[in-house]
Image 1 (cartoon, rainbow, N blue to C red):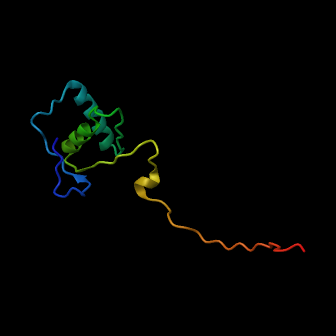
Image 2: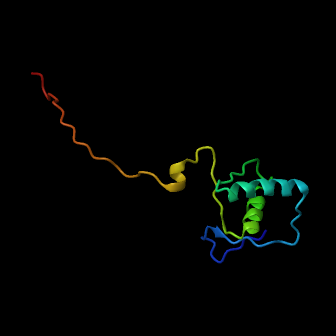
Image 3: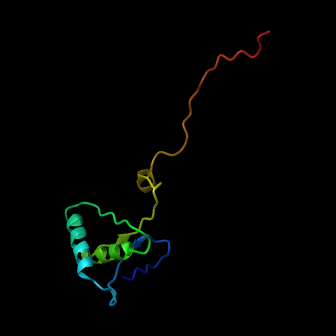
Length: 104
């Protein structure tokens, strides 16, 4: 898969087929399963060790259904608020304290 975009800052990738991509029976099986989930409206989460082809498979699937892809990188600390946003900022609360400055 080639995933060149016109702007390096752009997160949307338009996957294009590559002549050298080998689709083995194992890849066909995984692709079929993933596409069934996508067609049913479920998201597909690919996970595994580095260099095992998760990105290549995701771009292959996006190319098969004719949709752009968005790559999201994260680790075990990545949360929902990182993905869709959350409450940020500060809260203001007035607290009246009956502090006695001197006991004498």
